[in-house]
Image 1 (cartoon, one colour):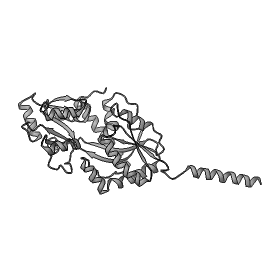
Image 2 (cartoon, rainbow, N blue to C red):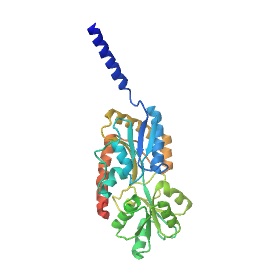
Image 3 (cartoon, helix red, strand yellow):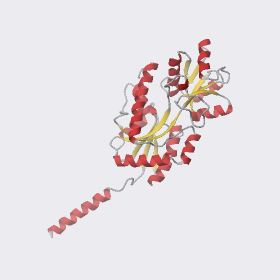
Image 4 (cartoon, rainbow, N blue to C red):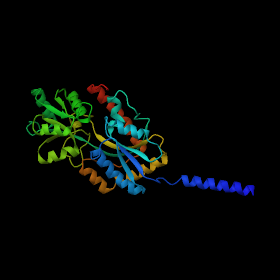
Length: 321
């Protein structure tokens, strides 16, 4: 009788354990975004996770945590429970550039996250007001050197992408084109359209409508390779070899997330990103994808990006704040 009772207890314990160990995912998944709803990172995250949700058979909830240079969202993602139900759709800022532009961070970009997969990449375009008598980057540099002090970039600040690209261009070209920082870039764009500033650097999705209407003239792209759909715009690297400055989105998870979950999300994400409809949708908003790659490949990409950012920040003289 005693033996039978013990056997029953063991059976109940095993059954309870089996119930707890439900196949993943057994409930909705949360993906943090460190920018506001409606912005490009949010749009891309929702596009991709919408399809990923169907593949995994569970709802994916996008949790927007904007503010403080992406720090609020990154910190929330880093502190989330690493149980396979929390992920972070991250841009370059929280994962690779913040350590060089902030003196301290409430999270560790290297230790607090596991690489899952790359999502998409995009480039930036150097644009000029039509009244600027330069049709190439080389002509722009020659114009500034012949008439110093006549040109100005509208940027989103020296610590953000457009400001850093402008500063790096000045460094490489030996020019001193003025930077006019704007707290809100649409105002900077309007000033460039009006000719109050002569130059602006925009991500492809933002630049495309102005180029199409002839309001702004494209001079060069910041990526080392030409952009799909905009192949006629030469890379800055054709004038300054080695120049490669791109934006990107990657999926990462809190450190400690189970490896089988990371591998499953990577596999499904790769399938989503190789779907022709998704590729086309991304291209329409100025992004390209080569698939998710592997977690190892993303880890290596992030390592190289951190080294590159360290060099760029050092060369253009930005001091952490």
